[in-house]
Length: 171
Length: 193
Image (cartoon, rainbow over all chains, first blue to last red; front, side):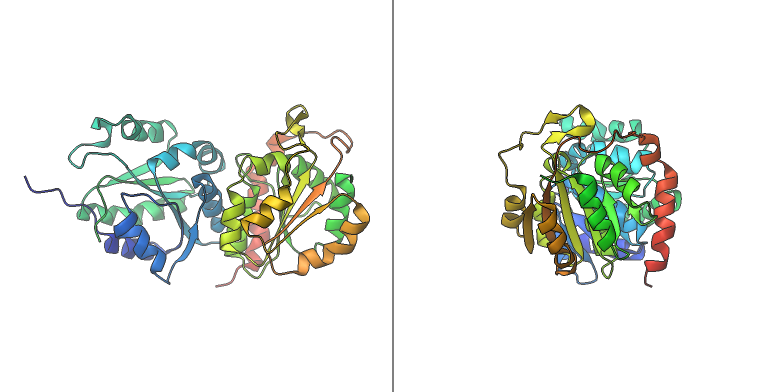
């Protein structure tokens, strides 16, 4: 069986620009590292903020929202889990449009996140649902088109949003 | 040791239109000293004041941003020191009100009390400047320079625990949507295209 194709980083970068996102706060995530994070960090259209811990990025992105600057927080699902309290406070209770792109480390390319053998992957969508957080799943190249409207929706409704990356991003 | 309110009165006098991001106990006391729609108190989870301030400093690069952090709060987000140092916003001044306790949660000592040099940590992380103050007179003398210097600038303000009149910890006020809207409205004229 041919390997399942992942999303292309260049397409995600175009989608971010299309959505008016020019600020990125990030911690490295191996799912997105080569195809997305390295190119993003070298693209001078973006203000790139290297984080030491993911929950800082929730606050940074929310604060940029007060300045009418759209931002995304790029991390892996372990960082999302570590940031849940701040996402709860800033995103859910304050109603700030914190947009997150989350690589699902350990997810099998051919399985849905909830069917993964990894508990760390399996629990992510139910947790986001319990918190009432809008989410999209980007697995293949065709899914990238879901990103700009999801970001627009987050800012229009002032709610947090998570784009889960289910396969390794290709260059 | 200094009194927190006395430090805040000095900062208020030197504020000169700066945005002030204040956290928890400091937010309540700061509001007593200098109520102003450019006070940002909606910092979400404990420890996140400096990260919000960093976002504002990036988004409003011509605007001075002052953080009134607490020592317990800083300890809960220590990684902020390296992130701020690496981002290096010239317009950010990070004050940490250091009383060695978790004042809003019963006055228990922090693990850093009497042992840890917070300014030393900020200096080692790479802040442009980092200082500690125990005397109000020296702080008052240095304050204009701290606010004028290219940042990020850090200053630990060593204050007595529980030195202020009893606070009403009105968290409904602190977390109210009205606080965020007031701030959003106040920031609007400062935005560039």
